[in-house]
Image (cartoon, rainbow, N blue to C red; front, side, top):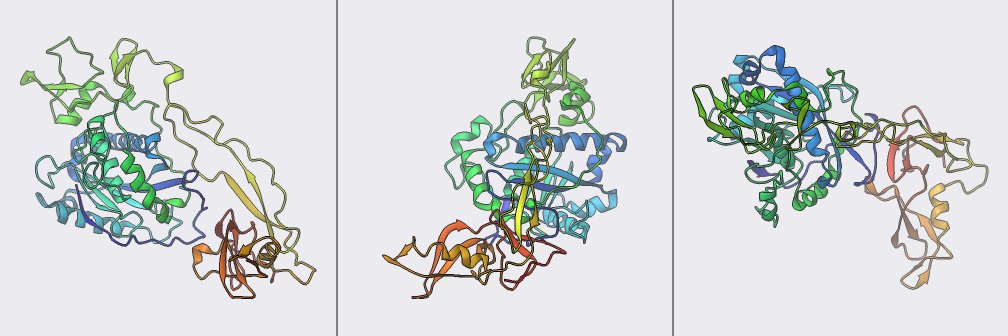
Length: 469
């Protein structure tokens, strides 16, 4: 469920000192740092001694959904803070039968919880709120703004929690905040709904059958590069470790209770079905009335002696099918400097191959390269303007309107264009894009002694003053 399109996406400007930035949509890793709010109804249902493990498991599943290759982007969902609300506060946030007001209350609450310091380990980009209260009409699963990611008040979702299948609701609602619409509503992806598309109007995705539709991928691509708050590296958080497969900690009886409420257990009235195909549940008061959410138990759930559910099948688990999270390999040595004088840049890199992610395992957090200034002494020759040198190189080669020109450096007025090479004709004054990035180490602006261009992006070098050009 969604409301109100944000016509002008607000680009939240993140202080460049806050952790490192990256580049390129398909190569870049985006991190959604999440504040998870849980109201009293969910805390009481699961119990204070058990709810943290449940929430960590649920959010791990949400992250796995965003790791699916059909998304077409590298997005990690990173839990940075859990807040459990007392009864009085919960009742003030959720207005029964009023989803828009409930969401507004939750978003305002999340805004008030934000840390002042962007470098705080608990600073969040997005808030997810879980409740077992009926905040809307019967069957309403979630509510969220569209394209609110990184906005201080709009980057939030309200979700009805009723078991691990709620992970798909959370992923769906966060998808709205990232800019995704419902499949088949305003786009041509209605054909993907029966196949378990996550952005279906009524979420029908299940653990053995889910994907992001082609429309979701296109809509995400439209907005993702505008969400600067997702470009920083998350801090490490010492959450308790969980097993590779979430079902190793949860029986079918427990999952039935999460799905349908107290007293529900795995249905045993009929023994002909495979318990890993669909999880059927019943209440002892009416054991022959079995209910299902049309999805299998979560992976790892015990289904027979020595066997566990995996992707809807009861099998013996082997190492080749277990998830493997990626870890960084060793850094390379720093390479050569991009300039011989006047402040250049050199790089070292690392690969996510120790080991590589496998079987749905997480990719590595953090940047795959580091850079440092080098050869910072001033250049001796008269022409020491690095941007001017790069424009001058095109004098004998580049024709504009059929004529060769003498090209002078041009500082583009748009901040985000300053790491692209723009040159101005001395003869006509015309400004032309050379359709390439400036060389690494080029000053971003003649007025800024602290920033250089690195791989097409502006980098602030705190504590380092560049030599004058």
